[in-house]
Amino acid sequence: MKIDSKKKIILLVKRNLRFLIQLLFFILAPGLFSAAFGGVKTASSLIGRGEVLEITSAILTLLVLLAFTWIFGRVFCGMVCSFGAFGDLVFTIGELVRKKLKLKKVTIPKKTEKLLSYLKYVVLVAILAICFFQGQKFIHGKSPWDAFAQLISGSPRFKRYEIGYLILFLIMIGMVLIPRFFCRFLCPLGAIFALLPPPLLSLKKFSSAPSTHRACGRCQACSSACPAGLELNKEDNPMDVVTSGECFRCMKCALVCPQKKPALYLAGKRLPLIPMVATILVLFIALLIVFGLTRF
Ligand code: SF4
Ligand code: SF4
Ligand code: SF4
Image 1 (cartoon, rainbow, N blue to C red):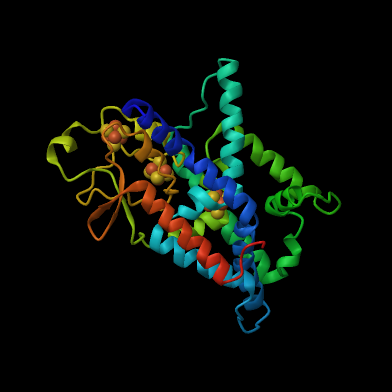
Image 2: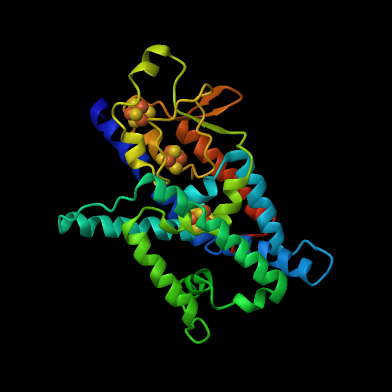
């Protein structure tokens, strides 16, 4: 095989790898995000009723995801969560339609974007308060996640889920226009992830070579590709680490950078992207199996 065609195949695999991973987890564990957030609701309801916190399967799912995210960053959001994958799919369809109709991309001013990103904390606090005072049954059927779970179950029910479907529909309008609309601005589970301390496996922007360091910031390909709206080309802190809790660890920035600057680092050592992502995901699947959290 010629070197050129070999490179093309590697590039094709790299570009579509995340989609294939998302598809795999959509089949393997479609309700994981909802189960994990169920842990938050259960904990709040139990505390509200003055009961002892016991480790239910929802709380266990939450704890596993929190530990995983603290170690590896929000890989769950970037590659595993089916609602995140759904958002990516809806936005991609929107992009295709926009290109066909030659419509402009929707852009939000950075200040507005920052303000909107706080909304998810409001949603989180509101849900915690409702569960604490009223119990989690109160919001059943009103959540867009419940409606989404119904849709992907294969035999959706509509009765008692009307509000959930309506909110899901409104969210989908946002998803069509803005990448990761729900994740960035509304997801209460994402709000919890964003509050975790910086992960052990860090994402850094620069290679240590000073000559390549200087040339960065001009092309902005990483920032344009970033679904979290992070401005990586401007990020220039002394440790070169992407510190934002909003990073989904989707690794799009690493794939588009012509100089291969963004990369994963552990204890100061740069790690090869694909083997590292594969190792993380195999570990994640092993955790799901050990704790009995897959649908099989
Ligand atoms: S932010 Fe929420 S919806 Fe988005 S990928 Fe993460 S858990 Fe899923
Ligand atoms: S900084 Fe990179 S890994 Fe993080 S969300 Fe943006 S593109 Fe994805
Ligand atoms: S894509 Fe690479 S070279 Fe371009 S601004 Fe981003 S990190 Fe720098």
